[in-house]
Length: 267
Image 1 (spheres, one colour):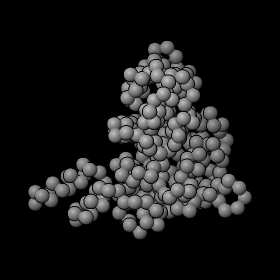
Image 2: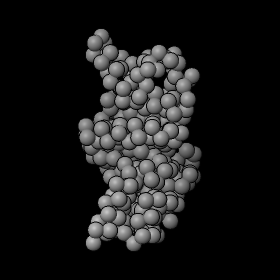
Image 3: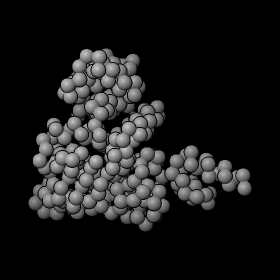
Image 4: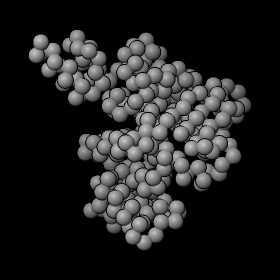
């Protein structure tokens, strides 16, 4: 679905911001990109969606090389939710924001209305369909931005700190959205500083350090390698730390922790 082959990128002549980046993401896979501030995570997302072009190497998105494909064509295959939702909201009503992308794809009439209704329900804003997006609170604005991308049904979804600023209900809703997209075969790539969220959602973790790919591992293998996580500069998820403190098998989700704890209590 997505392939990054030996990519290097610099903003100006000199030391590269990213160097020798190489990985693949399959359909139906959820991959998290983690690392310290300044490690190059958001830059990498902008390379993936074609806003930036690599100095060397190649990025293939759903069969198209980003170097040869206009951004508006790539946007049919790879949708991006940016850190600041205000940067991608420009319509006067929530429903208009959701409708904009599908209209560009040629949807009209009942098909368009069904798509709008489905997305509004998924993001929990059916009752706010006629509200101005910028009149909503931060959590709801971010869900509008997420919904505007979901409405185009891209096979690849990029989420840049999409969980930031969400209230508890919206976090749960976002988790459901990611799980649904995974089940539909969407490749989901998320940049995230919340390691508990990463532990719950990601199948695999890419760790960036000083502009290089320092890790490409299944989520549990990544978080249980203490030397690796320390070198990349990320914290261990709370539930993993708790399971280790209680001498339980390493767990990454509250449900897995509860199962491990109850299994020990029954012995």
